Image 1 (cartoon, rainbow, N blue to C red):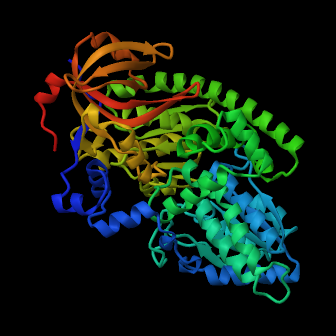
Image 2: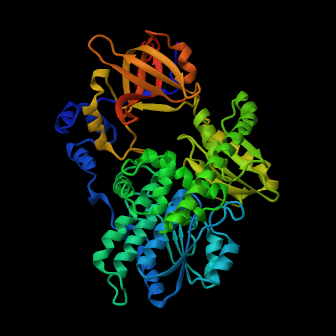
Image 3: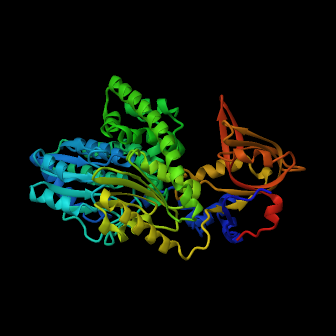
Length: 585
């Protein structure tokens, strides 16, 4: 008997009046209701992705002083430095703001720290160097907790504007402006912009204001086109950083995907070719699994400036060279990650046997560029918070990934007295710790996580099922209906359907035994449909012909050799006998 790997929760049925008034397919209406849209008007607005939901940039706190200082720098010819981060969100943020400021007439250049030598965020040595070259520094996707570093910069005569989206500490940096939608006093009604989303709002405000200045060569009529051309970067950074595709983000990513599919950036076009993404077919999945990993490979394996240069260049030959280098680095990153995963899993075996509720792997052989990937793999596989640390001589750097039950950034806040620096989000964070304090830190963090999880007898991932459907309802018409939910991704997932009582006509393993390919039969009067279950290849021997199962999955289109066929993307499954012994909430 096959038991599900997750706890299934079938969403409560939408009121009949809502389903009728929504004027869409009943299953789509149910999916909309599950997303908190409880009136026909709300559902219609969501499907329209009305750009009216996009906020005025000035609803972000400190936008006015930031724009005023930037305009003064442009007018007076001061050098501006955009200080970024080495991940895809940080790189796209840096490219975007540099390009926008140049369009506004600024003398501006980028600075992205080296992950290995400098680590995440602002550092004193970089500030000392930049203070000799620039008069204004604008951070993107970093800086919100850099209180001492910003104070140092200001003392050196380097004005600082912070733009960030990470969790805010107890004290704000003493910058001229601190733009972060997560500030408690920020009137913005949507706090989940990516770093690139915050940078885009600043870019919009600067471009529009600069075009109004008597000294500016920027025409007001040119601003909308410049803004639109930046949106491919917004889409990449937002999706790569796993921000929820709701409200403002959904609108930005929708427009950004359209721009990505017609992009004129030679570097981005070549990167997409290397990644197997056809122009015109880039979607959120292509960003998540093909484009973003290659951009991230630069910062993980070498220096993020390589990815920056790829996205910035207008020279095709230069772009080709950068794209080739990124592809090589990404392959090396894959190999290194597999090796580190094996070592990490060997380390945590005893922890799992002891029912430890936070997984910890630490080694001098780990590279800081891949510890976050390894931590994420551990969390995905074992559904526990995971911390993976690269041990250094004097300082060690780690990454943490978590589950919904544990805000890992808040947990690190509770042990911050043991850290050199830290920052991040609820589900992912990074930190630097003095190596001599590593044992003390790991014990303290373990105790903190244990206290948070003490109220949970069992930890198990939950799978929300949007609606029940039978195979004859899974047709091209429903595909078209579900397409109205796009762009889908984190926070706006593709609908997951409960497909009950289907028989296995054929089951075979594919992908070297890792995955499971099924042919499902819905019974008399029902069609036969293909299904693919990634990572469930081990179940092939438990699914003989005619096994009756329930499937939780997404309706998916499989494109291969120019043909398009419907299939079910299986998220989980269980034998029907098991289903009859359980009740769905």
